[in-house]
Image (cartoon, rainbow, N blue to C red):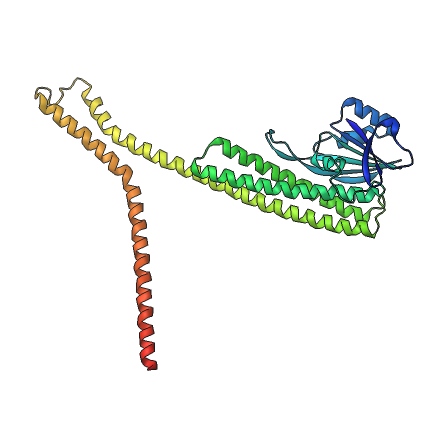
Length: 349
C-alpha cells in the first residue's frame, strides 16, 4: 500500500496522488508492498529493480549508497508480532531521496512508520530530509530499548515458571527470545556502522543541528547494543543452567531406576532358578512357606525404601549439622567478644 504525505503549517497531511503540491516536499510511504506497488515505484520514480529487491530482502544489511538520480539508505527497524513464533525481529527499511521526494519502502508494517504517520514525533519536518532520516533512526533506537526491556521481563517470568516445573514449552520460548536478542544485536551493530558513515559520506548534507541529533542517536544506539549483549549473556547462562538441572534430574531418576532393578534382580533370579525342574522349598510346609516368602518380600521392600531415602536423609542431616555448627560458632564468637569487652573494661578501671 502506498500513501502520500505532505506537511502544511507543521502538520502532516495525507493526500491523494492527484492532490499533491509539486512545490512541497512529499513523503511516499510504501508499506506492506504488493507486486502492483513495486511496479508503480519502478515506473513512476525510476527505482532500480535491484535496489527494490535488496530492500525487500529480510536479511539485507544497513548501508548507504548513491545512484544516478537518487540516494539509497537501508536501515534495520525492530518489529513485534505477538502471535509469531519469534515475536521480536528486525526488518530492513529502504529510504530513497530524490529531488523533493523521500520514499520509504518496507515489506511489512512497522511501529516506527506508524508513529510518523500518526504525528507522534515532535519537531518532525519534511523540509529537512537528513533530519527526517535521523529522527527515523532515533525512533528505531527507542523501540529497540523498549523491546529489549520487554524481552528481559518475559525471560524473568519464564524463569519463575521453570523453577516450578521444567517443560518444553517454556524452554522453546526462551530459545525464541534468545534468537530475538541475536537479531537485535546484529541489526544494532549494522545501524551503528550506518550512523558512522553518515559523518563521512558526501551524499547527505548535514548541518550542525543534524550532527548534534546524530550524536544523541549514536549514544542511544550504543546503549541498546550494550543492553542486548547483557541480556543475551544472561539468557545464555540461564539456558545452560536449566540444561544442567535437566541433566541432574535425569541422573537422579536413572539412579532410582537402577536401584529398583538391582533389588528386583534377586527375586527374579530365585524365581528363574526354581522355575526349572527343581523341587520348590516349602512346597509341602503349608502356611510356613507363605509366611517366609511374604517376609522376604517385605524385607526387600523396606531395603529398597531405605536405599532410596538414604542419600536424601544424609543430605538433610549434613545440612542440619552445618547449620548447628554455624550457630555454635556464632555463639562462641559472641561470648568471646563479650569476655574481651569485660577484660578491656576491667583494665580501664
